Amino acid sequence: MTERQIELDSLDTALLVFGSCDENIRLLEQEFGVTAVCRGSEIKLTGEEEGVEGAARAVDAMLTLIANKTPLEEQTVRYCISLARSGEDGKISELTGDFIAITTKGRPVRPKTLGQKRYLEAIGKNSITFGVGPAGTGKTY
Image (cartoon, rainbow, N blue to C red; front, side, top):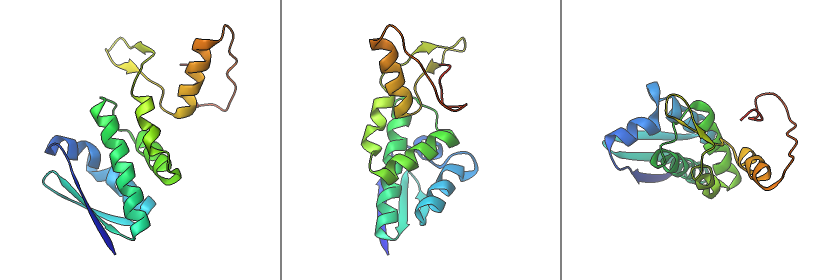
């Protein structure tokens, strides 16, 4: 059994990481087979070494998104988990840099995946860009 502690900035950050009714942390626990406990502004992860390290990388990715004012929704948390599993969690900062537009409610529209980010780069570099793919992959934006 391995144990790792992650210090957070504040209780508000801990609330964002854990999510509504602890849904974000439950996802981490299920996906990595770890146990997460919050004590104040500190998260303690316990489990097998590989699971704890993966969960810690996913939490770090979530903290990067929080620091850049990106809301943590279930889809975003699942994406952080998949990037942490594949070892690409360091690339999460690429998603936080630029935004496409501001909605009428004042929220920025940003790419949610690295694939969407590459798609936007292709649109910016080329006169004509064809976007093909299954429904729900972000082609409209």
